[in-house]
Image 1 (spheres, one colour):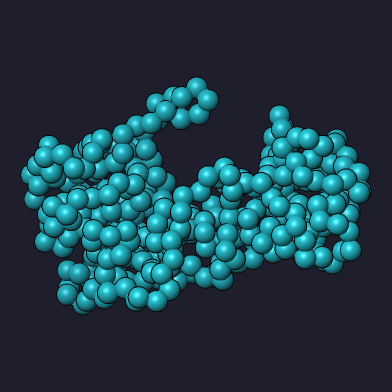
Image 2: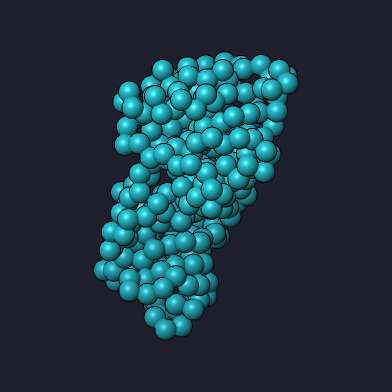
Length: 307
């Protein structure tokens, strides 16, 4: 197929590489403009742009998809389909209708669950046992288009949002490859999404980071792993913020919520009478490390109450 590929972050890179490997003609790669990153605000290209340039592909970075200039740029390609993977912008109807096969999207959830911006992380935050990827034909709604194919993947008890993100990015690349084969052969028939089970996955932000120790241990554990690697769960230790990267659910305790009940391993009482074991952390002004390594140089007394 002759394709236009639209994508921006790391999640969209494996799918682009798979399309190249499969021998499709990637006539144009559309990605968001370079953005300032970090404390020094260094202008940085999106991951998809870096990948495209590595393969010598033409890159287009419009600031808006709604202009006549953008439409004419895409129309002139004469593509068979537009592939959209985590592009990050809403496409107007005239672009959705531009090609024979339409706009084919790879979405990181089992639709109609987790429509929206952060489907992978919310599956972990909510403690789901399963996630997956869906290919669909984009329409004018938010992730409401007809389903083409779907693949499933279990979520383990210790899996973080970042780890699931990487796995689903690879799964999405495989699913997209099979989807295009099925569309070409005529074997895939688009299926409307079910009306039941619809939920939305809002964007993550730093207001979600602080742990509330009066919650149950499992919910706090899900919060820690769902927010890893960003924006990262936090607590307060002696007035300073500590980031938590890895935890497990521990045993029962009668101590008040937020109380440190042991230090080898570091265990904190939760609101349901169970404990949360902190395995990996990062204190203010320090590097990320195992909790045991941190405690050797910065002991925390049993009975300390964390904020």
